[in-house]
Amino acid sequence: MSAEALRVLEGGRAPRGWEELWAKDVWRQDELPHGDLASTYRGSVYLHFEHLRQPWLKEAAKRWVRARLLGDTTPRTMSEYLSDLRHFSQWLDEHAPQVTSPALLTREVLENFLLWLRVDADWKPATRQRRVISLRNLLDEQSEDGLAGLPRGATIHGAEVPRVDYRLPKELGDDIFGQWVDPQNLVLLESEQHRTIVLLLAHTGFRVSSLITLPRDTLRIGPDGHPYLRYWNIKSKREAMLPVPPQLAAQLERHEAHLCEHYPDGTEWLLPSPPPSRRGMSRGGEHHITHSTVRRVVKGYVRRAEIRTRDGRLALDIHPHLFRHHLGTSMVNDNVPLPVIQKILDHGSLEMTGHYARLHDETLKREVLRWHERVNRRGERIALPIDGPLEEATWMKERIARAKQALPNGYCGLPLVQTCPHPNACLSCDSFLTDGSFRDIHEQQRAQTRNLLGRAQDNNNVRLIEVLQRDEASLTRILEALDAIDADHSDDAAVDLRDLATPTTQEIA
Image (tube, rainbow, N blue to C red; front, top):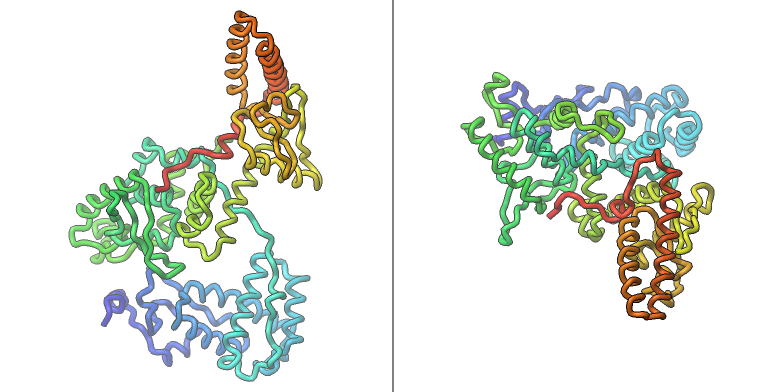
C-alpha cells in the first residue's frame, strides 16, 4: 500500500470503490479510489452532487467527475465545476422542467439558457463566463457517455462563451514591498517558518500551491555559486528551478536549523505542519501547511509590522498572489525580456505575461497625466490632454518619445519617423520637452553653462559667448516655468517619473 494510502487509513478513512461511492451524493477527497490519495492538499474537499435536481444530470456529472479525476484535474477544481452546474440545474427546474433526459436537452433549450444568462442573471461577467464554460465542458466531454442520446446540435459554441473585459493585475507599491522585506519588520514575526513564508512570497512569485509543497531540500547552489530553488509547479505539473537572491538563501539556511530543532524525527516538507508539541498529534511534520495558513501569516504580518499604504491605512488588502504580480511588473520595469518572464512565472502564453507590461504602462501613464504639464525650451507650458479620445493617442506619442530618444534632461517630441537634425542641441530645439523630474539636471547644467560663459567672456570668445548665453537663457526660462508649475501643485505629493520608468526593485537573480 502506498504511503499516501496509509496516511488516509491512519486518519480514520479508507478509500472506497466506485460502486460504494456512486450511491453517495457527497464525495470526500480522501474517499476517492485512485491517485487523489496522493493529492498535496491536506484538508476536506467535498464534491457535492445533491444540488443537481435532475437524475440524468447528476449521473452525467458523476461520470464526468470520475473521468476528470482519473486524468489531471484536481478534486478542488471539480468541486468548483459542480458548483457552476448547480445553477444550470436550477434554471432547468424553473424554466425547462420538460427536460427529463439528455435526449430532450435541445439546442433551443441551451439558447434559452444563454439568453437568460445574458439578460436576467445577476452575475458578474467572470462568473457568467465560468458557468458557461463548465456547462460547455460537460456537454463536450460527456455527449457519448453520461449524456448518451444528447442531440447532435446540443452544444455551446466558443463564440457564445461570454467575454470578460481585461482587468489589469492589482499593484503592490514599492513602498509596501520595502516595508514587507524590512529586516526590522521581519524580526517581529513569531517564528522562522513565518519569516520564510514572507520572504518566499516576496522573492519567488510562487503560486501558493507551489510554495506550500516545497521540499525540504529545495535550496540548491549552482556551479556558478548562485542559489536556486527546486520546486514542483502544481499548475504545470512539472519540476522547475528558479534563481533566488542571497537574502532568501540565508533565510532558508536559518530555516533548516529550525527544522532540525523542532522536527527531530524529520520531515520531507520545507513548510511542514506544526510539530506534535503544538497540536498534540503524533504525525507532526508529516503534512505541509495549508493555503489558509499562508493567508493567515500574511494578514498577521501586516498587523504585527503595521505595514501601511501611502495614506496611512493598514495594507489589509494584501494577499499572497499579489507578490506574483509584483515580481512580474518589477521584471518588466527592469527590461527583462517577456519570454524570460514567462519562463520564471510559468505562464502558458506570452499574452498572460504581457499583462504585466500593460500594468507598468498604465501606472506610468497615470502619474504622467497627473503631472501633465511639460515645458519647452522657451519656458512655455505644454499640457497633455487628460480627457477624451485624444488622450490615448497623446499617451502613445509620449511613450514612443521616451523609447525613441532618451535624453538626460527631458524627452523629444518629434513625430514618428522624423529624424532629429540637431540631436546634440536640444535646448535650441522646438521639439524638446521636459518636466520637474529633471530639475536637478537643469540646475546643474545652468551652473556649468554660467561657469563656461564666464571663461568665454574672459577669453573674449564671441561665438561661444553667444551660444552659451542662449543656453543659459533657455535653462533659466525652463526653471522659472517649472517653479510656476510647482507653485500650482504645491499641495500634491512629489513623484519622480524617472523612477516610475526604471525603478529599482528587489534582486531577481
